[in-house]
Length: 133
Figure 1 (cartoon, rainbow, N blue to C red):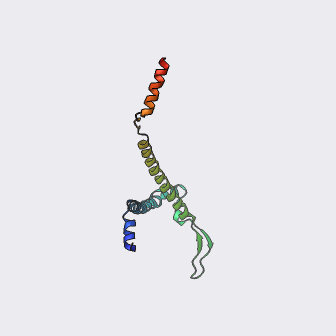
Figure 2: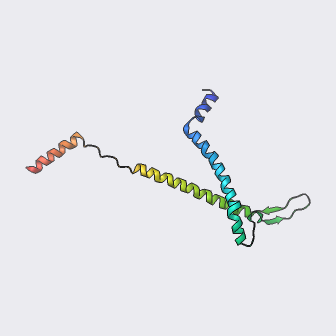
């Protein structure tokens, strides 16, 4: 099988296309959450904490020297990224929880009992006859 045919077979499977769509939507969702955290959530929190801009919070390890840039630990950006992660993780948790509840509803659908086998019917009849005697 040629490389192109093999790739076409791989790419045309339904789960690969679903995964690709999920990755694109997930990337867009990540951007939305990042903007939401940076532009909506963190400014009020910074205001409550004394007009702090979290993206500017950093510890300088080594000051700038000539053309060499300063070495800093940007813990404010890390806090924003951590809040991003928590929101995305919670959203994914809700989606998975919803899907699991739908699967449980499908699995919980009652299965009609099957008719007893011929052997079971005969044994039941024999038992009933012996009880009568």
